[in-house]
View: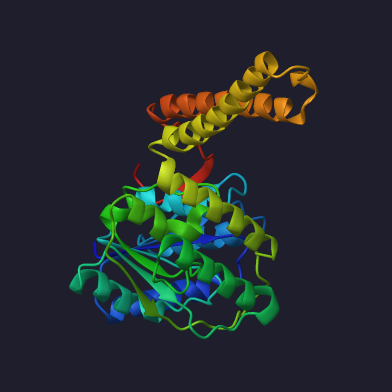
Length: 315
């Protein structure tokens, strides 16, 4: 199979049929063999019934439905598990991502032997205050922190080699950082493509300003994980050792003053409590690093997403 299109959605009943027809036109005109995998992230409207109807009309349409809302990262992760195409394309379900971009993304992966191609919505039709400005700040920070050349880390329209999505795990709110996660896993051939961004045709966005707060928290998290997930002792152990050493130096000085300086009252000095606190924190951080090192060597427990129903998927 040439292409798997993975589409997470949440309450998008107005756009799904139109999106599905658009994808079919693009695939047939380019003679691709393909599958479309819809992941229902706990929708409360008629979205899943529409997908069920589409799957009855064509076996290329597949789907998974969560029992509740887990988030976009969980939806993508489950979609990646069942995808079988040589190239996996992800896109949003609100018609703001154009399926006409799929052939170009596919060609970049196959012809240029890239691992990932990320879409770049250079011209956006979102609210300037709510999305455009925060997105630019977020992407600038990401480029500087991770030394990435990508201009639009948030873009949902991306293409991956199948091998990439089978060797990464997306969880929490980490879908924004899939290129960073993949790079940390050794997939370094990453490029971007300017893609068309369209005005939202139906409904309202499911993301508010709070996603940028979460985005920056995830930014800190993924930076730590990408650098120290396999060696947490390097971070906690080093910091703990430094603090313990500082406390030990202070304690040594105070002990010297106690015995060799007449009238010196060690416990009445603020320095005494600072040194004591430093030593305690140092030991705690060192033990934290040791325990984290032990845990990191164990198999990470997989999250069990409760799938209510699946369509045309043999697993």
